[in-house]
Amino acid sequence: MLDKLFRKKTVAADGSILDRIAEVQNRPMPAHVAIIMDGNGRWAKQRNLPRIAGHHEGMKKVRLITRIANNLGIKVLTLYAFSTENWKRPKPEIDFLMKLPGEFLSTYLPELIEQNVKVEMIGNFDMLPAHTKNAIRKAMDETAHNDGLTLNFAMNYGSRLELVESVKEIAALIAEGKIGPEDIDENLIGSHLMTAHLPEPDLLIRTSGEVRLSNFMLWQLAYAEFTFMDVLWPDFDELCMLNAIEEFQLRNRRFGSVEGKGTV
Ligand code: FPP
Image (cartoon, rainbow, N blue to C red):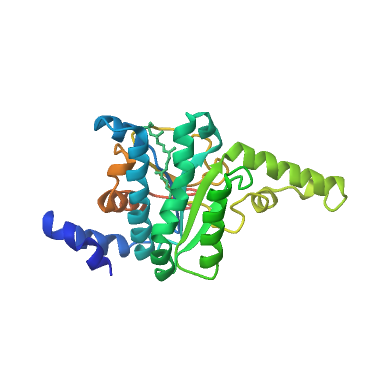
């Protein structure tokens, strides 16, 4: 399957990509990869195209990277598709971005089902236009029993809002006398986040050369490895994905501990 996916590139490039895949697959794979897909507007500008052309090209990369992630055995892929701050963009651009889930899912849902991908979403669902909600709900319903890759769209998502909601839920439990303040710990807070059922991201990728989190999974990324790549999202391809995973695999994750415990 992977051979098939990468064959074109293998023949065209230096012949080494299959070796790279084998190397990456021989090392521990990140269970959860989160991506801030940035640079669509700049990609379009470079080509004298409207910004929405960049978003449309970016949508095609969502398909490619989903297939690769699934084939590599990654369990969760969270993609930052629309933030709570993105409502400040011009209305035509917002309208276009809100239509993308519908276009993507009406085109690729059969393929996602065939590949055993499960579609999920984090973010404020209620505020989305009806057509966006319908497309996402349909995809979630039709893939609910799949157990391959979880393709998790962060749509109308903002990490601070998520934390505020979680604090409100916990405060309500205390007000109802169901728990006391002493019961608040990291697990409790984590269990009230929209990602409660998912492993925390191991690897964050941000494209376009920007080096910031933009209100994305602030709690969940506490121990993730960060990779900031100088490539615009519509140019992100299988080699970029392999490079990011390889960088993750070659890093030394200590989770606050030290190497070789027992030596001072
Ligand atoms: C940020 O780049 C990108 C977005 C706000 C939208 C990302 C959405 C996609 C890649 C497609 C999502 C697909 C589905 C199926 C939901 P930017 O436009 O801010 O780039 P710029 O910084 O170069 O202007």
